Image 1 (tube, rainbow, N blue to C red):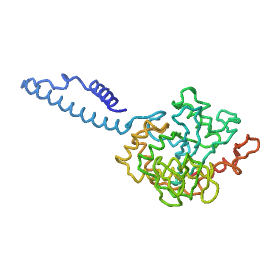
Image 2 (cartoon, rainbow, N blue to C red; image 1 turned 30 degrees about the horizontal axis):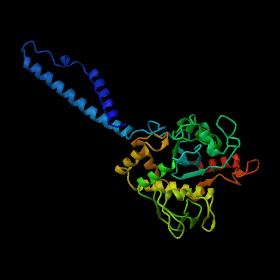
Image 3 (cartoon, rainbow, N blue to C red; image 1 turned 135 degrees about the vertical axis):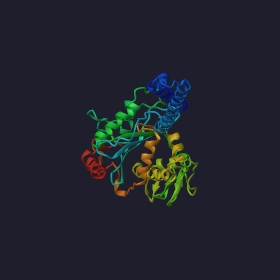
Image 4 (cartoon, helix red, strand yellow; image 1 turned 90 degrees about the vertical axis):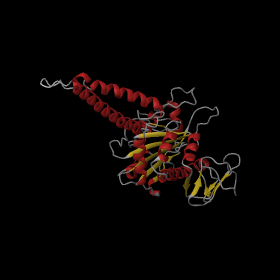
Length: 372
């Protein structure tokens, strides 16, 4: 909503206020019968009109600023309206989705990153990752996904599957309800990004500094492989060109996607990259916080509005609310979990390379770590 919206809002406001004002002819007092003063009446008329217009102008300016603060920048796809809704449990919980969508033509769109993140009233953040290869995932309306992996459920719900580039907000909402039902927790919002959007957002904030739980050596990633050294405050950018060790990779995209090779001398995996994603999200939030809530936050909102598919209200008031929540937040290792085998899932009764959820331990963890 740019200038055209503000013009329309201003015109409607002006029309409404003009309708509410009494006719100018009735605002001037009748001349005193004993001392007729037609020029005084004219003066009173002009004075009253001037005062009314001044008040009108002040009201328009004030209301226009409120409109700008509330709805600018433009609401993007799937965006909600108003202020943050913390739901019945009083805490903010968001389903974070990372898509494997590419501009090249291919079938489907999979949500390979599925993270439920919550901020508790004590300021601690907890995150739970649902592995992409989970099957028989519960649905809100009853039944399960069957042998279809959880990362395909959004695409299954998508109404226009022929439109590979399009995003179905209704399908995102439906999938969010499934996740909430499976975990038996309230989820207030969803937010989905594709890979190119992820790259652009990281570059928009300049960099994200992470503590690498490494070294990470993945000779399978891309054509040349990647290597991340075991360093703290290691700065990552969107998608810098990388090659195998000893070249130190700075690609944030590679860092959150790498799942082969080794990490800290042991096997790298889907599960280990999920834990890296938890830390990256928290570190990225702290990076946003360090940049301030003035022009830097406004600029980031301009970048987010058309690129992130979310039902979080995309206005500056909400952005500042989230900014303030980040400032008082912390996260520990005990508040992060990947809901995979063998505690939270089992391969029994599941197709090869997939596993079924163990709902009781999953829900117990959520109850314990998502509570206040």
